[in-house]
Image 1 (cartoon, rainbow, N blue to C red):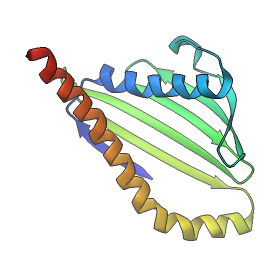
Image 2 (image 1 turned 180 degrees about the vertical axis):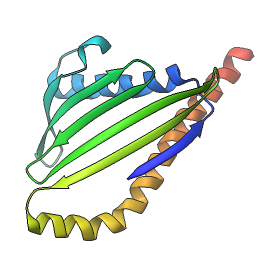
Image 3 (image 1 turned 90 degrees about the vertical axis):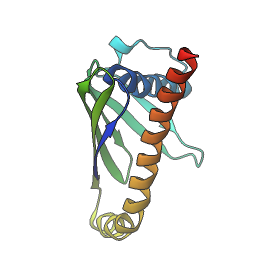
Length: 146
């Protein structure tokens, strides 16, 4: 899945939202309070509500530019890339890419069929998240002007 979107938020604002989310996720999963500079190369195990587990590795962190991570389960390997390009001081371009490798032939067939259906909903959900981030910035900006 690949999504490109222009947002009316500064690149550092969007980057901070992504990093804060990652740091929160790590704290919830490990009880460790990392700093941004400790993220690259960090690996941890996340347990989901249904007791499934995934190994997450932060692969690349470049301030205000990119955030890459990999999630591995016994069925799939997901790679996620956020590329952030500053357009001007108040806007940025987000390029989001998510790839999935399935483990085993049966899982590949299942993921292919399910992926076609869920892909649409995942894109819609991701675009809604981007809109929420943009609205938090814009409402914050309106608040500071009053």
